[in-house]
Each structure stands twice: as structure tokens, then as C-alpha cells.
Image (cartoon, rainbow, N blue to C red; front, side, top):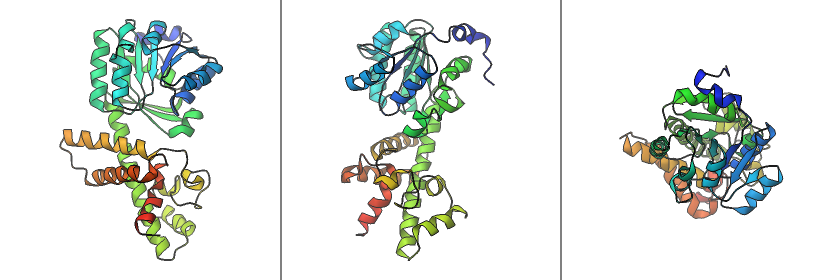
Length: 313
């Protein structure tokens, strides 16, 4: 593990050369800080000046645009909210590809449509650069503790060069195949996560209505065949677990808006591949309705609260 292939040895020998980082939000900021902690000079930019200032205070160099980052770094990580942001940052008038150097490694950790990842890879290749998709699982807490899981898609010869940086920010780095397969893995995981969370919320609500103590019901589920991550690690019922969003009025965690976005990506890819996803589609609609009912900025486990509201509790 961790051996460097012949094609990546030159880049690894200069391992502490600057790394570019674009997108300093809830996920990007702690990720960039972990690169700094590992001794990598970071050259960063973000559309919000406050995010830039915070990272500048921890030792990063801040520049004005993605193009400026590309001028100064030959390894660049992007962490952006959605497909349009990625297209703009890479191919826009002040985008990375305006000034990218030949041989630059571009790693996109945003969660976007796999088709957009493939488009960006083609555009990068025309400029002599290499694009890889590397979306993450684990959320804000894991980003801070460098315990993210990265799902990587791209040319296998560049995987070790990408892994060198990603291991500074995550506990698991998994090669999935060609460009776009990292996104595919992430989208599939989040579709299952949403379905599981809704199922857990429905089950807990029914059990409570039937007179069961929620902590007792969770305990029984977690030693039975219904057990899942949403029941044993991230329970949506307030008071059942400590240290999860349900214990803090559903603040923090993974927002309902982001879950609705990821389910939209799952829906698009399912339509494009003619794949039936009846529960995925229903989960998408539930989270979209939640966004319009005041849950947009709450953690996605707030579907429990939403269901209680729907039945008039």
C-alpha cells in the first residue's frame, strides 16, 4: 500500500510543492486545513471573502480566481456545491482551464452528475491536464478529523498521485474505475442512505405511536435484522442518541437541501440509464417537499420531525 508507481514518482518527489484548493465551504475549509497540517503549502480561492480570510489566517495563500490558482499550482482540489459551479470553476472566463499547466492533476471532490465529470475530464485532457472525480462520504465532522472516504474515478496511472493528497484528508481512499465512477458510487450510497433514513423515521414514529419507548425500540432494532446506519449511528429521534443532529434540533450534519440535490442526481442518472428506482424517486419527492416546508437547512434526519408534523403530532 502507498507505493508510488513509475509514472507518479516525479510528482511525489516534489510532494510539498503547493496544492491549489477551490471551494472553502463547510467541507472544503477543513479539508484544506488538513493539507496545511500535513505540510503542504495551499493556494486557495472562494467566492466568499470571509471563507478565504479564515483559511489565510491558518497559513494559506489566497488568490482572486480559479485561473490564478492554476497558474501557481500543478495539483488542484475543488470542492463545490453543484454541477453548474464545477463547470464555471473549470471552464468559465476565470476558470482553471484558462491557465492550467500541462501535466496538472485536477481532483474534484464535489458531488455532481457523472456526465459532467466526464465532460470536465475531456476539457482538461485538451489542455494536457488530468481530471479525476473524488467525491466524499462522511460529512463535516469527518472532514475536520481527516476521516473522510474518497471514491475516486480516473486514469489508474494517476491514482497514487491523487491518493497522496487524499490520505491527508481522509481515512479511506477507494479507486472505483474510470472518470465518473466515483460520482456513481457516491450517488448510489446517498440514495440508499435517504431511503434508509425515511424507513427508520417511519418505523420509530410507528413504534412510538404503539406505545414503545424510543430508546428501547432503537435498541431492539439495532440487535435485529432491521438495523441500519440510520438506526444505530445517526438515529433521527431526539433523545435516543447523543452527538447527532437529532439531539441538537437537527442543526449541523448533512442538510436536507443537499440530500434533495443528491437524490435529484440519482433520479437523472436512473432516467438516463432506464433504471427503475421507485423508492429513490419517492425519497427525492419527500426531501423536495421538506425543502419547501422549512426543513431546507436542517439535517436530513429531520424527516422524522416532518413525518410527525404530517400526522398532526
